[in-house]
Length: 280
Image (cartoon, rainbow, N blue to C red):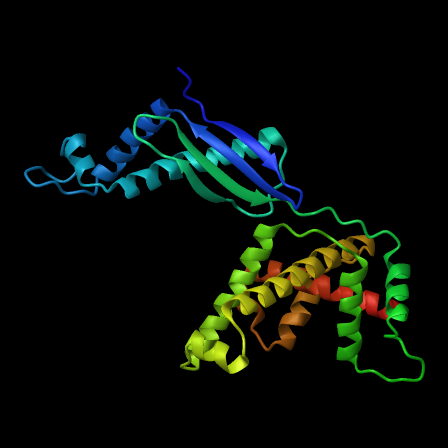
């Protein structure tokens, strides 16, 4: 009897990856027993001391949803890791899991959805950028433009010149994050989403489309600047991170390592953008 999880990987053109796992029914059953034993330690069944009730009685106290969730949490992380290794995948994010088939007495099927980051080909990006800027009359001899205008124009040119396909799942996650931040700000102002949309003359669909475009552009710019930083051999050392933290007025001793790692990536992309700006 097969007691191993099998997987089928399907890659989509935009970088999305779907992995369909089939979990044999005997493995489901044995894992359920393990889960029930674990949960039994904290479940009280009338007439029995805590942790001493028969497993059949314990199972009656556990909802089907809870039991299924715990079974999958035992099996899916390793199944996903094994699929990544065997298929030589490079997932950009931890997957979302969807139940395709979960029926008692039969094999379970679960779909994992993740993505890989797109490959970026810069080519002669400096020459292309200069051409893009000039073709759109962004560089006008004798006309002064502000630093912010110059940067905005440069970013537009970067996105027009270096085209990449951003996986849909990444765009959706970024857009959802931005929408959540907007909703939080609206709530703090004591407004409703309906009231806000009416005030700006937009529908929910308009807002979603707008934030999806912003999300795609933000992710594209981030990936492109990361590649530019590699090409230009830009490095960010601890001193640069410390200097940046000091400009924010924060206490260096209170900035955790994971925060420093985030700041390092931010400074790296900022340096890459400044490098491109100096070439224009």
